[in-house]
Amino acid sequence: MSRPLRATIDLAALRHNYGVAKRAAPRSRVLAVVKANAYGHGLERAARALAATADGFALIEPEYAVRLRESGFEREILLLEGFFEAGELPQLAAANIATAVATEEQLRALEAYRGGALDAYLKINTGMNRLGFAPQRAKAALERLRACPGVRSITLMTHFATSDGPEGIDDAMQRFGSATAGVPFPKSLANSAAIFAHPQSHADTVRLGIALYGATPFSDRTAASLGVKPAMTLTSALIAVQDLEAGETIGYGATFRAAQPMRVGVVACGYADGYPRHAASGAPVLVDGVRSRTAGRVSMDLITVDLTPVPGAGVGTPVTLWGEGLPIDDVAGSAGTVGYELMCALAPRVRVVEAGA
Ligand SMILES: *Cc1c(COP(=O)(O)O)cnc(C)c1O
Image 1: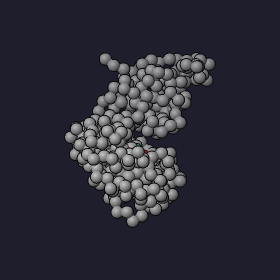
Image 2: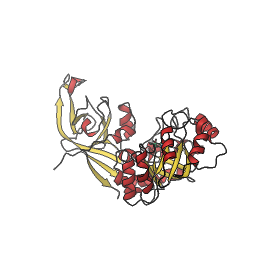
Image 3: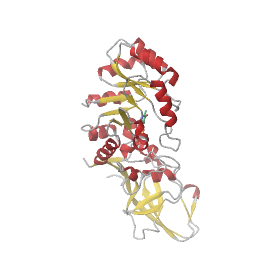
Image 4: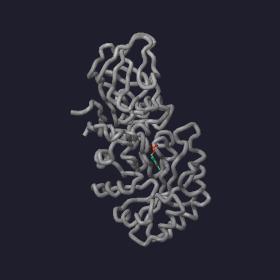
C-alpha cells in the first residue's frame, strides 16, 4: 500500500560512474563526494555501493563522517569544509577523519589542539572567495600548519569557481601555482568538471561529486557524453486522466489553457516530493517511455502532463520524472536550476528502492 512514486537508486550506475572518473583521472586518487546524503541518494547506500572500490569519501557533515568510519570503511574520509568547532577535533582524530583547514579560526584551533593527530588539507582561495587562505597568505599558513603537533600530514587544496564554464581554470591554476611554488606536498584541486575538462588539474587527489551520480556539471556537455549513467530514477504513474475542452485550464492559478481538446494525465508527484515547483509548464516528462511535457503548475502532490503524444495512456501508465531515459539535467534546465539541486531535494516521503546491488 503506497503511492506509485518511487526513487530507484542504481548502485551499479554509481560503481560504473566511479570507474568512468577513475579512467578520466588515471593517476589520481578519486574521492567520492557523499555530502548532502550522497546528493540525495542515501549516504549509507552510496557508501555501501562504493566501499570496495572508492579510494576515499569526502563530505561536509562531521557526524556523518564519523558514522561512515564506524560502518567499517578504512580508507580516507575527508571533511571538505573541515571542522566547525575545536571541540570536535579529538573525536575526528579518533575516527581518523581528515579535515580541511580553510579559515584562520580553524588554523588557530589546530595550533591550540594537543590531542591525537589528523591529516589536514590546507585550502587556498583561488577565486571562489568563500573559504580558503588568500594565495599570498598560503605559505605563512602552511608554516603554521606544519608546526602544529596535532597535524600529521598536509595536502594543498583548492576548489574551482569556473571549472565548468568557458572561463576555465587558467587563472585559478596560476594563483594556486604561485601560492604553492616549491612546496613539496600532495595536491587536490579537481571537482567533477575539472576531472573531465581539465586534466592539468588532476594532481594527487580529485573530488568526484555530481558525475558520480550520473549528471553533468556542464551546461553544454550532457551526462551521456561524459559516459556516466543516472544513479537516481524518479518514477510514478498516472492516477487520473482528464479530457479537456478547448479553453479549459489546468491547476492552481489556471496558468495553462487548452488550445484545443486534449487529454491530460495526473501524476502522483509534486513539490513535496522534491519535484521543483518552479519547473515551467512544458518541462519534459516520459509517459510510458514517450517524451511529453508538463501542463500547468506543479502542486504539492500532483503534476499534470499532456497525453497528446501518448493516446494509449490511462490510469496506471508509468511516468518517469527524471533519470533513466530522461536526464535530470533536462528537467533542471526547465526549472532554471541544475541537476545537483533536484537530486539533493528528493523528499523523505519518497519511497526509495535499490537496483543493481
Ligand atoms: C561538493 C564539492 C565537490 C564536488 O563537486 P562536483 O561539482 O559535485 O563534482 C568537490 N570539492 C568540494 C570542496 C566540494 O564542496
